[in-house]
Length: 201
Image (tube, rainbow, N blue to C red; front, side, top):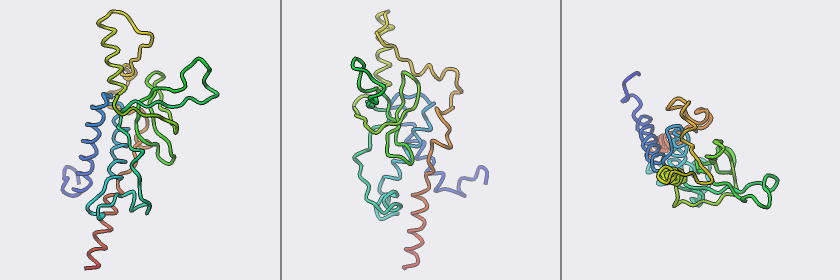
């Protein structure tokens, strides 16, 4: 029912949780609002990987797949990621890796989702090295600020935020329906567990 959040309180609270996570991660990484869908998608992934009291402190993904999940692949959203350039696309004199921004995980495949700020494209990669102590966009802002103060340009000038100047402010970098996974696992499994507990009682 319109303007009656009490009718679906659990879903409303989950939406609020996801948006608060999205805002915190995106602002910390100094990414523009065009990346909001990617941040929500990653927040949804983190929620599904987090232990839940309604699931006996198991994570939704573990209950859903019946497999224990390792957290070794979890990385800081927006951190610097160095993706290995394929051998057929590099030469002896060019770098062996491409510095990108970590956006999360691609659904259905075992690879990382990255953003190339130079070519303004999303790429997928498996052989990636991360530096979670550096937010690439913050690093770029400092380079740009230094250029403005000194009055000269460095050998590489990267201005990803300007890519979105001609784009509506809240438009994501790709189709939201394809990018954002449905975050109903916790709620559905929690309800199933609750119903099962009531039957046993």
